[in-house]
Amino acid sequence: MTTPLVLLDLDGTLMDSAPGITASVAHAYRTLGLPVPDAAALRSFVGPPIPDSFPVHGVPRERVGEAIVAYRAAYSAGGMFDNSVFDGVAAALRELRAAGVMLAVATSKPEVYARPICDRFGLTELVDGVFGAPLDEATSTKADVIAKALATLGRHSPAAPEDGPVLMVGDREHDVHGSAAHGIDCLGVTWGYAAPGELEAAGAVGQVHDVAALAREILARLR
Image 1 (tube, one colour):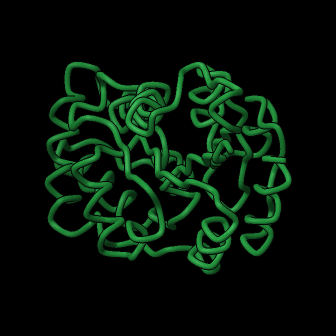
Image 2 (cartoon, rainbow, N blue to C red):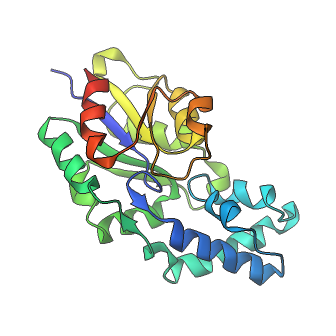
């Protein structure tokens, strides 16, 4: 019998990680002597690879490396743990595992940060693997992270029916596009950091508006 697999984004899907990320981003701008973006722009940094976001928000491309160094200094000094698991997430993951679903975190965050974060907040014990980007995020996409997860868990890419159903769950367009590269549908969650209409425009197969409904909606998509 095939085992369903659900790949779960971390920031904005399982965890409210905006406080630590936005504070670390603001620190980077101040370090570079550049104007700190407004709250909405800072919030948009949560989810996509950090190197992609700095040039979009006013950092000259030749200074992006400098901004990343400053960001990581603040993030590794404590910003990475300035977050929390969304209420109800742990219960949803336990329900999915009880239903025989294999779970894996697949995040654009560097794996060297993702693993200790999942350890600290009790997520590691609720999933079957934690997969992230290399420390040089600029060399990786969400599709690359998903490819690594699939290969490590013994699944084919693009997703093969004989392996069992695979579903991505995420809150941003790059989750949708990354999973689509492997023929995998993405279920969007609306408690994260997407702009209005972002998930629909990207092609998410559906949206979940309440963590309490997460396990039920996932199981319905896997049938």
